[in-house]
Amino acid sequence: MSFNRKGASDRLSRRQLNLQSFDDVLVEAKSLSRVGYHRVAKWSLGQICDHVARFMDESIDGFQNPPAMAPLMRPFLRMMYLGKILRNERLPAKFPTLKELQPDEWADDSKALPQLEKAIARIQAPNAEFVPSPALGKLTPEEWRKVHLWHCQHHLEFLIPAARDAQANKREGE
Image (cartoon, rainbow, N blue to C red; front, top):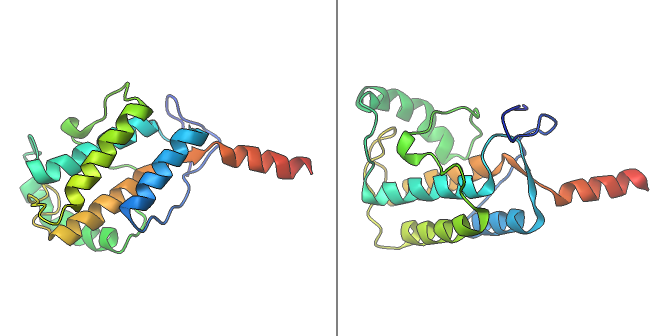
């Protein structure tokens, strides 16, 4: 699958990650920040970190202005997607993002990484209390953490490490 959006490559496809922990998320994000990356979709690393951190924070602080249709859609969304997310299955790329969770257009990679680290620390706290999801309803803390890990992985799959290009070019030249 390839995207052609402003700021995105039309040559690259979404990669497949298998992040097992939030430590893996931070290692991946820091690595992308260090080696550089190509965007397959429209968001930068800073925008992705900003978005997933906001989602983590709102899962504890409460969601601002959930869609009015959320209660009607919740049973369907829960039935169709919760099991897949908890099993870490890949879902289609296009899901609408709540306006409040859309990243800042100019989110800086170096500033968004500490924001992500702080949000991860909050959701990993043993006493973290989560609110119900507008889309999926009431989740246990462990389910919420799995949703957040899946969400991070989903978005990071759209960034391709630039170092991969250097390795590929080196093999081609041999």
